[in-house]
Structure formats: C-alpha cells, structure tokens
Length: 608
Image (cartoon, rainbow, N blue to C red; front, side):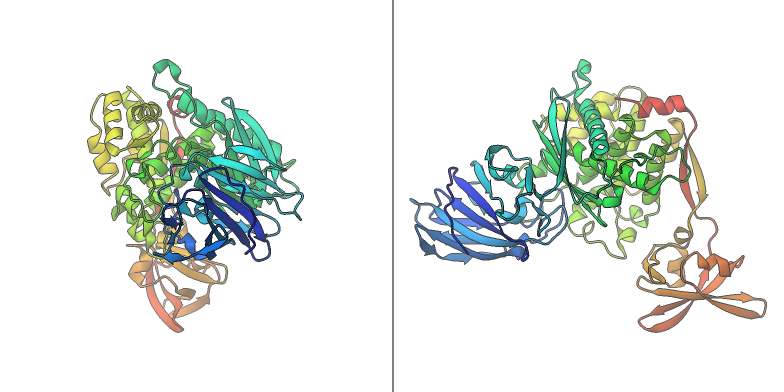
C-alpha cells in the first residue's frame, strides 16, 4: 500500500483514493493528530435507516498503522474493532482498503463507470474523538477527467468537479453524508429558499432531467410547506433544518429503494421508471389501463417524497433510543411504525397535495396499501410495535413464512396514521398535520417517545387517544378502516380477489409455477402445498373419469378446472410427485376505494 502525505489539518482526517477500479478497491488513510496511548478504532456494523447488522468490516482488508515512519502493532479486539499501542505526542496513521461491489444504497460501489460510498462502510471510528471535527479529502483519479463528485458535506475547498476537502462537525455527520462519483447527470433548483441538487447516475439517453427537477421541486415545496407553512397557528417549526440538500439517484436495470440522510438521500430505481423526453410523465389515475412507464415514474416520485419527508421525521424528530447511535450493535426501538409508517402515509398524500397525482390515483395507492395489510396473515400475530423491535431479525431477513408471522411497520404504520388522521378530522378539533408540527415543537426537532405522541394527541384533540394507540399500535385486531373511510366520503367496494390470493399463495412464474409462500389459513395450506413446491398440473374429475392437465402459469388452473369446486394438484417436491386434494374457494375478496363525496374527500386531501 503506497503511503502519501495527508496534509491533515483537523484532529481526525481521512483521505480516500480510488485505488483500483477493476479490483473495486477504495484506499483509505486515517490520520489521528493526537491519539490515545491505547487508541481504539472500529467500523460500524450497521447504517442508520436500514435496521440489520451487515458487518461492513467483512470488506476491510490490509489494515496497518504507523507513527513517524515506524510500524505500530494493531491488536484486533473483536469482529470490527482494533487497538494500537502508540505514542501520544505524534500523529497515528492508519491505512486500509475497502472492497466495494454492492450496488445498493447501503454500502459502497466502485468500478470504471461509477463510485459511491456511505461513510459507515469506509470510515473507522476513532474511539474517544467522535465529537471532534472530522476532515475528509477525496482525491480524483488521474485517468477519469470526466468524473464529478457530489455529497451533502460542506466543502472547505474543492479542486475540480467536486473533488477536494470537506469538513464534518463530528463522526456522525461524516458518516451521514454519502458520496457519489462518476460522469453523472446533475441539475439544481431552489425550494423554500434552500438550494437543492439532483444527481443521476446511469441515466439513459431518453431521460428527461427537466421534468424530474420540476416534479421534485414541487414535492420539496409541498413538504417544506407542510412542516413550516402554518405559521399563524404558532404550531409550525420556524424554518427547515437543512441549509442545502442533495438527491443521489442510481438508475439501474432493476432496483428500487432509498436511504435517508440529514441533508441528502441515496436512491435507486429502474432506468425505465425515469421520466422520458416526449413521453407522458404522470399517471393521474383517470386511465383504466395507465401507461407502465408513467406508473413507474409515479413510484419513483413516491420514493423521493418518502425520503425527503425523513429529513424531518427520523433524521431530526427521532426515537429517543436514537439520541446517540451505537454503531457497534443493534439499536432497538418500538417506534418504527411512527417514523417509517407515518412517513409512508405522507409520501403519497403529499404527492396529491403537490398536484402530481389526482384523487383517483391517490385512492389507488391507498387501496394497494390496505390490501397489502389485509392480505398478510401476520397482522393477527404481530403488532406494529413488535414489528419495530423485530426489524433486526425479521423485516430485513424475510423468508417464505414472513407474511404469516409478521406485519410491515411501513404499511400498517401508514394505516395507523390514516386512522388517526381521519379520526382527528372527523372529531373536528385538529388533524394529524397539526399534531406532526406540534410534536416537532414539543421535542425541539429531536428525540421523542410514544408518550410525546399521546400527550400531543390529547392536548390538540381534547381527549385521550391511549385506547386507540393501545389497540392499533400494540394490538393485532384489524383497524377500523371501513367506517373511517366511509365517513370521509370514500366508498369501499369488495371485489373478487386474484386467483393466487383466493388460494392463499404467492408464486413466481418465470419457469413454470413455483410456490414462494403459502399463506396461513388458506386453501393451499389446507391442501398441504408448501413453499418450494413446483406446481406441475392438476387432475379434474368429470363423472366417472378424470382428466390431467399440465399448467405453465397459475391462470391455467381455471382454464382446466372450469366449474369444478375440487381438484387434485400435481406438485413436485424434493423430486417426488405428489397429489394434493384442493378445494377452490369462491368468497375471497379484495378492496377497491372510490370517491363518494368529493367535498369530504377534498377537506382531507387538500389540507395543508
């Protein structure tokens, strides 16, 4: 590993070199101006916002240390921590490599077309000096003249195209500002007086950047208005908590997701979901068969809305357990239903208030969320408070039994927010909008507890909502969705469910019918079908004879079963052929929401 001068000026300084694009290696040099006699360093095991121990140290290699040109021995203390016995009167320099080939928003990536990293994947934490300023120098590659760099960190000086030196107030800020590098597209706009930058890596030639900027600006303005616009009531925060903001979007062939940061977000989407030049940009919901590209773009806008809302709700207003992150282990909280669920409620609602979708499109999105919860048997097993605690072992480690044992704190949490909002509005004293702003003021844009929420609800709503919180958040009974929606001018229709849901199955059909999940209590479970089975065909009795048919997709079942109420499913399991008697259910339904009273709906959807 080549050593070069660091020119460090801060107490803790990092330099990042693009060591090898083909080997996917970042080289990191860490200089500690005044080390402790027994200086410990450690690499995080997780990244805030993604609640799973990911063991980032698995990608760290060739760690070495020296002082004044002399090697310093390092003792490994655990899976991600080390200790150096050193002199306290001279700088300690550590050098190491990070392997980077995870094309997600959570870790790091480096090849000849793009570089990206989160600080939790690259930067060893200097124990005892976390609160000191941290300086970061990002060096350009001499052979990549067209590469640019974008990050939410404030620069102290830059060289070309964003490469240069940046300063973080502490280790927390350093690792909360991801870095994007490459020949990316970029644009800018101002919303709420705040400069915003949008970076897109991997954009195809048909990409319409102007449309993306215009629509993102409307989202940001709507959310800034949501948090800071209602000044006359003295229940709105005075000004946004960020001075600049940067969207970092990676467009790939197949991918979706986002991770929030204090003044930026890392996003990933399908290239086909980007807005296209000369192509309709939005799916307003009036077309019974909306264009798939427009539908995909609407999904992307919802993701942008979700992550930007997190700037307030989880990055500042956050669980009390997250007052100070412990990067070395799980950080538990029961409040993800609030911070992820309520954000999921507002992401689509604020698209509607920004006039990027209409009422019909919003009701379609809400219908999808409701059906996702109602079609999850695990909602009767696990509360959303329990789901929050179990995120570390269940939500991010999903398997064939996940829908039967768990409920999503995103989707059910969004429905808890919906129920609270409609309840408050129908009682006539306040709304969830006002409660959210009041919570910010009560908690001073910082740590909060469930007690803060219940106290704010009671103060503004004029009564205790402890019973609702106990039942909806800590219980497993179904939410009173139908009565609340009906009272708000929504008509709830029940329609026959799709065949897979009627059978209690989730399948893939890329090469025949492969069973992914058998839902609890459904016809498939009663017949004895299991996850991993290949459904080959069926036998149908007709009088005294029977006919057997091969199926390639699930819809073939009704073609050959016709009006039969019972069939014999032919499946392969562990190379064995099985015949399983299956009763075909008829009464399984799914929800569809339509508008009944546009005035009542408008009082809710148009609120600010």
